[in-house]
Image (tube, rainbow over all chains, first blue to last red):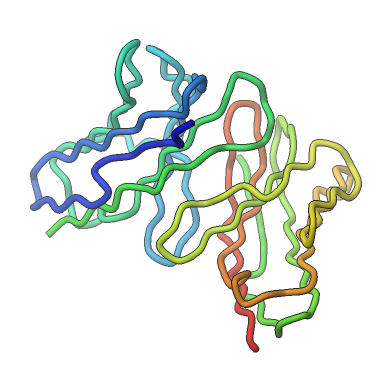
Length: 114
Length: 108
């Protein structure tokens, strides 16, 4: 059973470009979470999605950031017009339906904005 | 809102016991989780406490007191490979909110 798959693992963008980060949850998991981690800092919650629904986006910046989890295909975190402050590791996690307290994390996508 | 506090850094020697505390303020509390993260790696699940008391899993134990809004992670028989960051996280209604993390350094 494959784990949470994220790609790309590393992404370099210039200021003003767009970044698209993909996440395929573990098989059978319908809950997807995105977290951002700045160097030497903690994991900041961004958004919680279920298939075709955004459940909680309270941690998402109001502008330039969007997320989706379509009926088919991976979840996507999209950052438009990137700025240097967006440089971070973006982790996706998934969980099954029940609240078990356990999230399964992917290896992360490390975005560098030049 | 929510807030979690844990020490920023802890050091110990191999074979020792270390306790990492976590205090939290939140509404809609479901439980307290602990995760380990090595440098450059993904967070990995260690434990989850939904009820008061101590949960033991091998060398690691986790404790929760809901009335005190407090928990801790206890690591016994420390090994060099335990050097990592440890995050407590509060399960709040529909998401897991993490503390700022505790960096544990284990010395020989």
